[in-house]
Image (cartoon, rainbow over all chains, first blue to last red; front, side, top):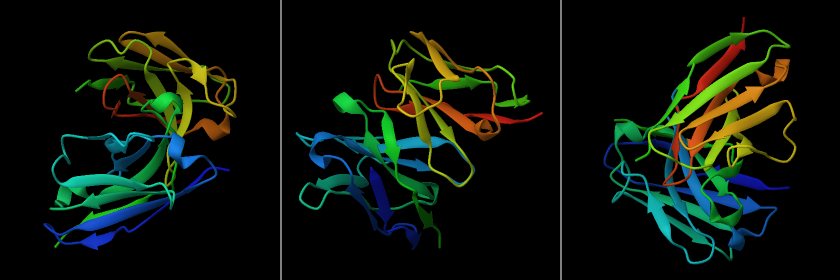
Length: 120
Length: 106
Protein backbone atom coordinates (compact mmCIF):
# COMPACT_ATOMS: atom_id res chain seq x y z
CA UNK A 1 0.00 0.00 0.00
CA UNK A 2 1.37 3.40 -0.99
CA UNK A 3 1.77 5.76 1.95
CA UNK A 4 3.02 9.34 2.01
CA UNK A 5 3.41 11.01 5.40
CA UNK A 6 4.29 14.70 5.62
CA UNK A 7 5.81 16.45 8.60
CA UNK A 8 7.46 19.74 9.47
CA UNK A 9 4.60 22.19 9.19
CA UNK A 10 3.83 24.82 11.80
CA UNK A 11 3.63 28.52 12.58
CA UNK A 12 6.51 30.63 11.31
CA UNK A 13 7.14 34.36 11.07
CA UNK A 14 7.43 36.10 7.71
CA UNK A 15 10.95 35.99 6.33
CA UNK A 16 11.86 32.84 8.25
CA UNK A 17 12.49 29.31 6.97
CA UNK A 18 10.85 25.92 7.34
CA UNK A 19 11.68 22.45 6.03
CA UNK A 20 8.98 19.96 5.13
CA UNK A 21 9.57 16.21 4.90
CA UNK A 22 7.60 13.39 3.31
CA UNK A 23 8.25 9.74 4.11
CA UNK A 24 7.25 7.38 1.32
CA UNK A 25 6.54 3.66 1.41
CA UNK A 26 4.76 0.97 -0.56
CA UNK A 27 6.32 1.65 -3.97
CA UNK A 28 9.71 1.83 -5.65
CA UNK A 29 10.60 5.38 -4.66
CA UNK A 30 13.49 5.63 -7.14
CA UNK A 31 11.21 5.15 -10.14
CA UNK A 32 8.78 8.02 -9.67
CA UNK A 33 8.73 11.76 -9.73
CA UNK A 34 7.60 13.38 -6.50
CA UNK A 35 5.86 16.68 -5.98
CA UNK A 36 4.60 19.25 -3.52
CA UNK A 37 1.14 20.70 -4.05
CA UNK A 38 -0.37 23.30 -1.74
CA UNK A 39 -3.82 24.55 -0.90
CA UNK A 40 -4.54 27.73 1.00
CA UNK A 41 -7.42 27.24 3.48
CA UNK A 42 -10.69 27.28 1.57
CA UNK A 43 -8.95 27.79 -1.77
CA UNK A 44 -7.89 25.74 -4.79
CA UNK A 45 -4.85 23.61 -5.55
CA UNK A 46 -1.47 24.95 -6.63
CA UNK A 47 1.49 22.84 -7.78
CA UNK A 48 4.60 24.06 -5.97
CA UNK A 49 7.51 21.92 -7.10
CA UNK A 50 8.48 18.54 -8.52
CA UNK A 51 11.57 16.36 -8.82
CA UNK A 52 12.12 13.48 -11.20
CA UNK A 53 12.89 9.97 -10.05
CA UNK A 54 16.16 9.25 -11.74
CA UNK A 55 18.01 12.31 -13.00
CA UNK A 56 16.72 14.50 -10.21
CA UNK A 57 15.63 17.28 -12.51
CA UNK A 58 13.49 19.83 -10.70
CA UNK A 59 10.81 22.36 -11.46
CA UNK A 60 9.17 25.17 -9.51
CA UNK A 61 6.12 27.34 -9.73
CA UNK A 62 6.98 30.98 -10.42
CA UNK A 63 5.48 31.92 -7.04
CA UNK A 64 8.21 30.03 -5.15
CA UNK A 65 11.15 30.02 -7.55
CA UNK A 66 14.32 31.22 -5.86
CA UNK A 67 12.85 30.75 -2.36
CA UNK A 68 11.96 27.04 -2.18
CA UNK A 69 14.21 24.05 -2.88
CA UNK A 70 12.99 20.51 -3.45
CA UNK A 71 15.20 17.49 -2.83
CA UNK A 72 14.93 13.77 -2.24
CA UNK A 73 16.90 11.10 -0.39
CA UNK A 74 16.61 7.76 -2.17
CA UNK A 75 18.16 5.79 0.70
CA UNK A 76 15.63 7.19 3.18
CA UNK A 77 12.76 7.19 0.64
CA UNK A 78 12.05 10.75 1.61
CA UNK A 79 11.10 13.99 -0.12
CA UNK A 80 11.91 17.44 1.24
CA UNK A 81 10.92 21.04 0.66
CA UNK A 82 13.19 23.76 2.04
CA UNK A 83 11.17 26.95 2.25
CA UNK A 84 13.05 30.22 2.76
CA UNK A 85 11.93 33.84 2.89
CA UNK A 86 8.42 32.75 3.74
CA UNK A 87 5.53 35.13 3.05
CA UNK A 88 1.99 35.24 4.45
CA UNK A 89 0.71 34.11 1.05
CA UNK A 90 2.64 30.84 1.50
CA UNK A 91 0.17 29.87 4.22
CA UNK A 92 -1.41 26.61 3.07
CA UNK A 93 -1.73 22.90 3.52
CA UNK A 94 1.25 21.32 1.77
CA UNK A 95 0.67 17.92 0.22
CA UNK A 96 3.34 15.48 -0.86
CA UNK A 97 2.22 13.67 -4.02
CA UNK A 98 3.55 10.79 -6.09
CA UNK A 99 3.88 11.39 -9.79
CA UNK A 100 2.14 9.20 -12.31
CA UNK A 101 3.78 6.56 -14.47
CA UNK A 102 6.14 7.69 -17.19
CA UNK A 103 7.34 10.65 -15.16
CA UNK A 104 4.14 12.45 -15.99
CA UNK A 105 3.12 15.36 -13.83
CA UNK A 106 -0.19 14.09 -12.56
CA UNK A 107 -0.55 12.80 -9.02
CA UNK A 108 -1.85 9.33 -8.22
CA UNK A 109 -1.21 9.27 -4.46
CA UNK A 110 -1.28 12.09 -1.94
CA UNK A 111 -0.29 12.46 1.69
CA UNK A 112 -2.63 13.84 4.31
CA UNK A 113 -1.02 17.28 4.20
CA UNK A 114 0.83 19.46 6.68
CA UNK A 115 -0.26 23.01 7.52
CA UNK A 116 2.19 25.88 7.19
CA UNK A 117 1.08 29.18 8.69
CA UNK A 118 3.16 32.28 8.01
CA UNK A 119 2.21 35.03 10.39
CA UNK A 120 3.77 37.45 12.84
CA UNK B 1 1.45 29.27 -17.95
CA UNK B 2 -1.57 27.36 -19.17
CA UNK B 3 -4.73 28.68 -17.50
CA UNK B 4 -7.54 26.29 -16.65
CA UNK B 5 -11.19 27.20 -16.18
CA UNK B 6 -14.10 25.07 -14.99
CA UNK B 7 -17.85 25.41 -15.24
CA UNK B 8 -20.02 25.54 -13.35
CA UNK B 9 -18.35 26.62 -10.12
CA UNK B 10 -21.16 25.01 -8.14
CA UNK B 11 -23.57 22.31 -9.25
CA UNK B 12 -26.63 21.27 -7.26
CA UNK B 13 -27.85 17.78 -8.03
CA UNK B 14 -29.78 14.84 -6.65
CA UNK B 15 -28.78 11.22 -6.17
CA UNK B 16 -29.20 9.41 -9.48
CA UNK B 17 -28.65 12.52 -11.62
CA UNK B 18 -26.26 12.57 -14.56
CA UNK B 19 -23.68 15.26 -13.86
CA UNK B 20 -21.31 16.95 -16.31
CA UNK B 21 -18.44 19.30 -15.46
CA UNK B 22 -16.55 21.19 -18.16
CA UNK B 23 -12.87 22.14 -18.08
CA UNK B 24 -11.17 24.42 -20.60
CA UNK B 25 -7.48 25.12 -21.19
CA UNK B 26 -6.07 28.42 -22.48
CA UNK B 27 -4.13 26.51 -25.14
CA UNK B 28 -4.08 22.99 -26.48
CA UNK B 29 -2.98 20.37 -23.98
CA UNK B 30 -3.80 17.46 -26.33
CA UNK B 31 -4.92 14.80 -23.81
CA UNK B 32 -2.71 15.68 -20.86
CA UNK B 33 -5.51 16.23 -18.37
CA UNK B 34 -6.38 14.72 -15.01
CA UNK B 35 -9.44 14.95 -12.79
CA UNK B 36 -9.46 14.81 -8.99
CA UNK B 37 -12.13 14.56 -6.31
CA UNK B 38 -11.64 16.28 -2.96
CA UNK B 39 -13.78 16.05 0.14
CA UNK B 40 -13.54 18.53 3.05
CA UNK B 41 -10.47 17.99 5.21
CA UNK B 42 -9.08 15.32 2.88
CA UNK B 43 -6.40 15.14 0.23
CA UNK B 44 -7.46 15.07 -3.41
CA UNK B 45 -8.03 11.69 -5.04
CA UNK B 46 -7.11 10.94 -8.64
CA UNK B 47 -10.09 9.87 -10.73
CA UNK B 48 -8.98 10.12 -14.36
CA UNK B 49 -5.75 10.81 -16.25
CA UNK B 50 -4.89 11.26 -19.92
CA UNK B 51 -8.35 12.81 -20.24
CA UNK B 52 -10.25 9.51 -20.27
CA UNK B 53 -8.28 6.77 -18.48
CA UNK B 54 -10.01 5.70 -15.28
CA UNK B 55 -7.64 5.29 -12.31
CA UNK B 56 -7.67 1.82 -10.80
CA UNK B 57 -10.39 1.38 -8.22
CA UNK B 58 -12.47 4.35 -9.37
CA UNK B 59 -16.12 3.44 -10.04
CA UNK B 60 -17.12 3.15 -13.67
CA UNK B 61 -19.86 5.78 -13.25
CA UNK B 62 -17.04 8.33 -13.63
CA UNK B 63 -15.97 9.11 -17.18
CA UNK B 64 -13.76 11.64 -18.91
CA UNK B 65 -13.63 12.88 -22.47
CA UNK B 66 -12.18 15.63 -24.61
CA UNK B 67 -8.95 16.75 -26.21
CA UNK B 68 -7.20 19.95 -27.16
CA UNK B 69 -8.76 22.69 -25.05
CA UNK B 70 -12.15 21.32 -23.92
CA UNK B 71 -12.77 18.42 -21.58
CA UNK B 72 -15.63 16.97 -19.57
CA UNK B 73 -16.03 14.86 -16.46
CA UNK B 74 -19.29 12.94 -16.34
CA UNK B 75 -20.83 11.10 -13.43
CA UNK B 76 -23.47 8.87 -14.98
CA UNK B 77 -25.57 8.38 -11.84
CA UNK B 78 -24.62 10.52 -8.86
CA UNK B 79 -24.17 8.60 -5.62
CA UNK B 80 -24.17 9.95 -2.02
CA UNK B 81 -20.38 9.50 -1.84
CA UNK B 82 -19.87 11.75 -4.89
CA UNK B 83 -20.79 15.05 -3.21
CA UNK B 84 -17.40 16.77 -3.26
CA UNK B 85 -15.29 19.31 -5.14
CA UNK B 86 -13.78 18.30 -8.48
CA UNK B 87 -10.63 19.75 -10.01
CA UNK B 88 -9.14 19.38 -13.46
CA UNK B 89 -5.38 19.68 -13.93
CA UNK B 90 -3.24 19.96 -17.06
CA UNK B 91 0.19 18.42 -17.27
CA UNK B 92 1.31 19.33 -20.77
CA UNK B 93 3.50 21.92 -19.09
CA UNK B 94 4.17 22.57 -15.42
CA UNK B 95 0.90 21.59 -13.75
CA UNK B 96 -1.95 24.00 -13.28
CA UNK B 97 -5.36 23.28 -11.79
CA UNK B 98 -8.81 24.55 -12.53
CA UNK B 99 -10.59 26.50 -9.75
CA UNK B 100 -12.83 23.58 -8.85
CA UNK B 101 -16.49 22.61 -9.16
CA UNK B 102 -18.42 21.92 -5.97
CA UNK B 103 -21.16 19.31 -6.35
CA UNK B 104 -23.74 19.67 -3.60
CA UNK B 105 -27.18 18.34 -2.77
CA UNK B 106 -30.12 20.01 -4.48
